[in-house]
Length: 237
Image (cartoon, rainbow, N blue to C red; front, side):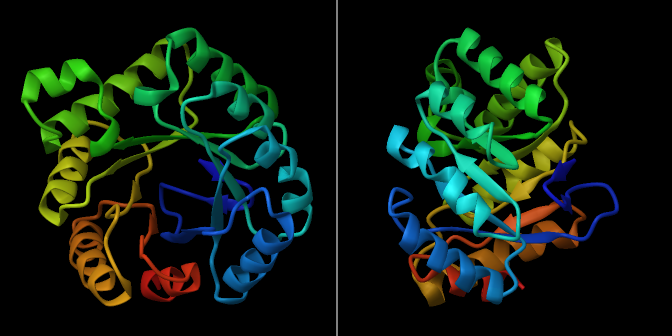
């Protein structure tokens, strides 16, 4: 797939991402952090879009950066519709976006603007029926959730996507990605969520992401640290 000027998947190099820790509504602070991330070599940058005010400053942020911009959307699909007009990719979690018609509206919006979706599944927001089936956010539950989302999107003709299955436990994340990768060929965004502080998170991410990459699993990655996002980029490379 193509996220702005960055190819993800296939024979493309693994790209390193990060996410701004600023309040997106503070465009000045966010642009400043983005410039620091770009200087560190970050290849794709994600920002949270929690409300209309944040969505409203996306054009200003996008105009000030050179790398692709991803909008992180939770719960309110209308924010995805606004973001799709500006950004290079929209991240949604089908488990928390609500009714299917809302997802279909997001699909139409990204199709209209020729951008992909990142289907982001994580242990903290699994569908109730999968939690009931497996009893906990197991790797099998994460993989099934992601596959269900992918198949639902395929059923309406949408294939322009990458997928992430994040867990904070290294072994659970590895197992979830492995299960999915052996059942689907979509590009994978890999990461260990809530990995920890700079040192702890670096070690956990190195173990988890290093193993996945050694198995040929992973097309783009983010190291999640409770630290300056620039540190995420350094560890990612």
